[in-house]
Amino acid sequence: MGSDGDLAYEALIQFMYRAPVALIQLQQDGDIEMLNPMASRLLMPLARDADLSNLFRVLEAYAPDLPALCAAFGAPQGVICEGKRMVVDHATVLALGLLKIDQQRLMAVLVDASHEVDREQRLLASAARVDTLTQLPNRAGALALLQQMTVRARAAADDHCAVVLINIDRFAHINDAHGIEVGNQVIALVAERLRATLRTASRTGQAVAAGVGTGSGAGAGAEIATRIGGDEFAIVLDGLRDGDTGALVAARLLERLGLPYRVGAHELTFSFSLGMVTLDAGTRDADDLLRHAAIAVAVAKAQGGNRLVRFAQHMRDEVLQRGCLEADLRLAVEREELFNLYQPVVGLLADGAIDPGAGVEALVRWRHPVRGMVGPVEFIGIAESTGLIDQLGEQVLARACHDFMDWQRQLGPRAPQLMAVNLSRAQLVQPDFCGKVAGILAASGMPAPALQLEITESLAAQGADIQQQLHGLKQLGVKLALDDFGTGYSSLSSLHLLPVDTVKIDRSFVTLAATSRHHQVLIEATVMVAHSLGMNTVAEGIETAEQAAVACAQGCNKGQGYLYSRPLDSLALQQWLQRQA
Image (tube, rainbow, N blue to C red; front, top):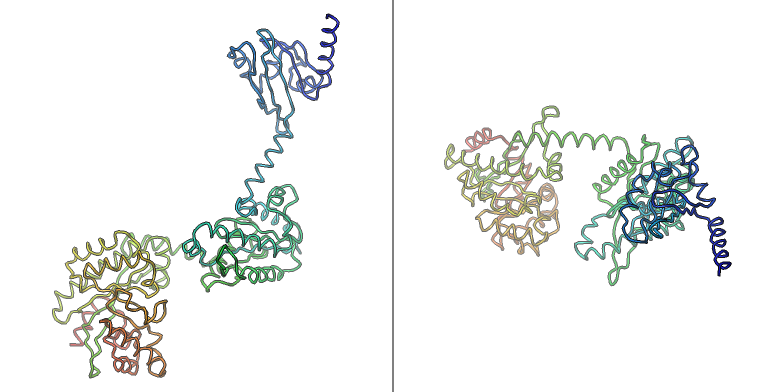
């Protein structure tokens, strides 16, 4: 029996000696009784004065809590700690396991976990750079690829590189009409089509993302698709033959992406807006590349979408100017520095005369301290996109109602009978908008029927929330007008569905009416349908006596335009009305 025990002990010693991991037998106080060569190799660089007599002292700088852990472990045997990592230096990580054998002895297992930690970090970095829906590199991956591309391009003057940003036009309508699940499927299909169209289609998103920063990412001749968020994709074009190759790739993408997509029972077709930036456009920063490409996409969308726009420096300058204008507008709204002008809306009488007091339309203006007079075309869009339109719209409406009541007191029967004020979609979607209008009417003392709120026909034809708001305004007694009729999405056949009192015929019809029989017929048809529904009509943009004669002959109730008057401030309007008497 003794011989068998000796053999077993010798076998154990041989195992410890040859084991590829560090094995250490120690006492409860850390004194080392036995260790194998691997343990010596790992511990010796950590030991002061090459002293390997006590494991706790050797590891004190890296795991000072080991004595406390062992003392707190009250069980007669078991695992005290497992895989406890200790960072020795920037390149070395050790993992320690401690096992209590009995009341006197412990067994420690120590392994070099450096390669495992490095692998984990690379896997985590790869996962952090991959979009889960499309398996393309995500925004972080795209930025890393772009940064790598810009660094390499600096070293090669004849290297041509570009980034193409792709955005699906009106993608929000897909989610609204078909649901988010269909929208996600569309995104995945677009990603697949990008892979199939680009030359590097065989490279998966994971491989590209994992290679970023290791020298195996973007390179000469690479065309790599990434998804940077939502419905936006960025294509990294590295190592192009010449400066025009990027535009050819973008044109190929625009053509391929525009083909129909099959999603379940639906066959869907979309248009895309593309913005392209080349490295010779004056930027060498990855963030700037994406930012400039986004500016070009915005320009493409403003031009109607379904097109490629190449970034130019003046576009950035315009964005910066818009940013300055936004800041100035915010301050002007807070200080209530914007003001109203009023354009007369005259009644068109059968004998060719006019009723000058039929009404006025309030038009907001802004006198900028540096740029001078700024028209609404320049700042209303900024106000809508920044949320300033709510406060601005309330100021315009309150001032218009106040001025209207002043005119009633000062002019009596010669005062305008109706005040028209334009509304934006942002105002109409406010849940408490009807309450705000009611409050302004009450504060000014203005009768609700004397106020006419005007909306475009494209806005009036939108969803149930807009329709509900319009009916709420009607219940207040306010009149509603359909502005710029003929330029939006509704038609004469659907006019009866809109809760409006007045149809304003767009100036594009009125301008041509004196010379075009076609436009005369369009005006006549609009007037006939509107009158049959009990609605009034206004001809907008009348500039000549001939245009006025046609509008009157076609039965328009009112006219508005420079023939009668330009927009006037409150005092000038009163003087104009007195001269017409």
